[in-house]
Length: 298
Image 1 (cartoon, rainbow, N blue to C red):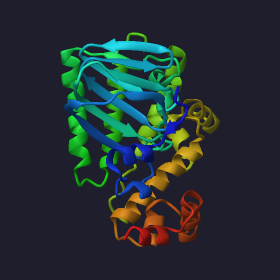
Image 2 (image 1 turned 90 degrees about the vertical axis):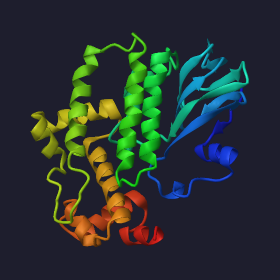
Image 3 (image 1 turned 30 degrees about the vertical axis):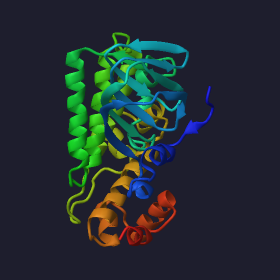
Image 4 (image 1 turned 30 degrees about the horizontal axis):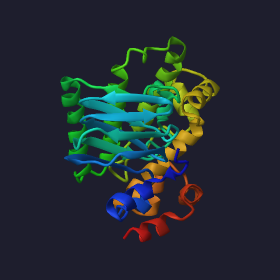
């Protein structure tokens, strides 16, 4: 067994000899690729520090954890940083698609490990029908279209497409049935995230978010603030305040990158009573001032 963990930087240096130009300034990384119908080398058994979802075409043998599965035509492979895997090619001409994303790609507003697909003992390889392949290819093609777009918030769309692919995968296995004991917590988490995300993107310096404190959200959800915090902690591993703060930090980065608004304008839009409070908040998250960050990306 190979005990070395491949980092996302290693993946790029091995495959392309360089990192993407925007890699250093990203809060969370995502990319999507298409495999050509050429000979693909087998991958050594080991772990990676990033997630990867692969649509693989052709005859191959896949190993993950202590399991082995052989695919004669089509398989969808979920690569999890916690689970070592490898595959052996059994024919020369293979094709398909794959996307990779870091654990920070979803920030703290969504913990994909709440889904049973990402449990340590979960099934990771799914044999596909022709119809499955057509539908999954459609998701990947939409990813390609979106990542090439100039839409400022395209990574929000890409996160949704990754979630669509995750949910599609879970529907392939009857074991991923509703767990009634967890339904209530998941519903509360989903509603909380919907309310939080609904405030963004901010499109004008005169537009100001209305909901910022945990009590703002618990009031709308008609539950106690402590109950909301306990629920989010169980489903995401983060407190209500942490999730809110990280989403506001994400929006601050977007506004600094993609607008010419003053620091004061951004502070106001994000509901900071004083610009100095926003600067302190930003420094706590990114170890630099908003001005220094903006200057570094010019």
